[in-house]
Length: 193
Image (tube, rainbow, N blue to C red; front, side, top):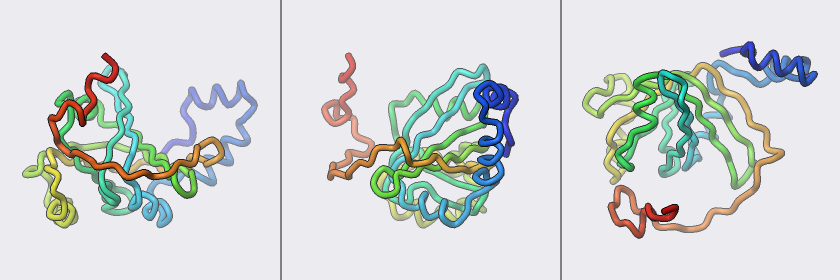
């Protein structure tokens, strides 16, 4: 957990927000999850993950699943499954080169509060998943019809709020999800072509 990078501190001085930033670091920055954060993660069906390669080239991608697809192993550890995607593996490739990861969860439907979780990520094929994690994740593996290609384990460095004041409130509509399909119509891969 950091208390402000050199870049953050420089901009804080320029913007006159040092006092406010110090209050945020002291009050909001945690080195792990508290119970409310764990409860929020358990209800999420989506998370945005940010990674970068060894040269700092960035990628931000969403991950989706049923409620609870992100598993809180303990207050310092999360796990999520990687399902079949486009085969590019931008995030997993970045994690291989640079294990730092940023995650943002947003409750668009109730509180409109967000949660930032930053840490170090490790990627495992199912058979290579360390036994201490495999036993905890066994029920999730057994209770999903979606093939899990890999697991990502995150060791948490810091967790903190993203305040709700600018987050829009949305409503959830029913949609049939076609997990793992190659159907071009369902995938809409030509949308931007």
